[in-house]
Image (tube, rainbow, N blue to C red; front, side, top):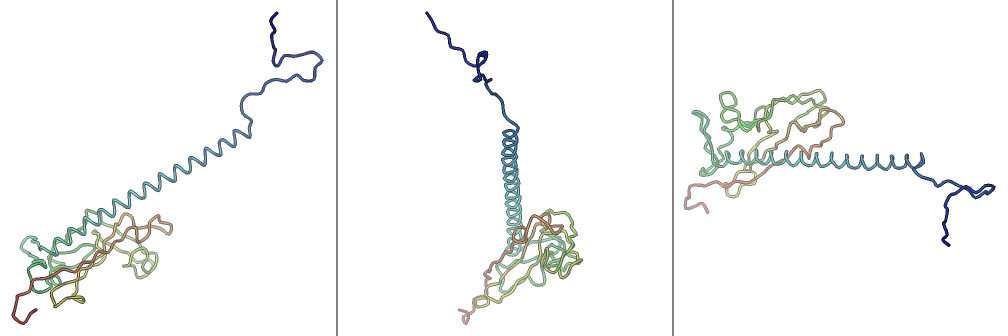
Length: 213
């Protein structure tokens, strides 16, 4: 004779009768939704961080490219129409003082009036409002000032303060990415993110006289 087991069957007069439970309770659903929300926020935060990192890498690469172009002109010279900039290589003195000027975010070849602006980085003209002195750019002297330009050069200068036997010239300039400059008090970028300084000491070739070591 075979035996058949019954589970969950109703036995009249028995207090041990119960139905099997299934599904989720409201508390479980709320906990699961909260955990999903936390995971979603973490993923979204990671995406924003990656996007910011990529933006900063592209801005740095662009400034490095701009710097290479500037160094190339300084070292090898160039020509713009009838204006000729000799460059540093092959000359016995620093020729940059009267031939290169910093005007409106650009380095100009010529006198700044009849010359041509170069090295603008392809940026659109900008008008950046200053929040206070040195904020968001070093050119800001007080709140309410405006930095207007159409290039990436914040400053440019040459000197021979560290010249060795008068045969070197020190070149220094600062570049920035205008589109990353914060436009409000809660901007997502800081000066180290959108500003880079470049410096080098370039050797010059002097006429070799017997008394020159």
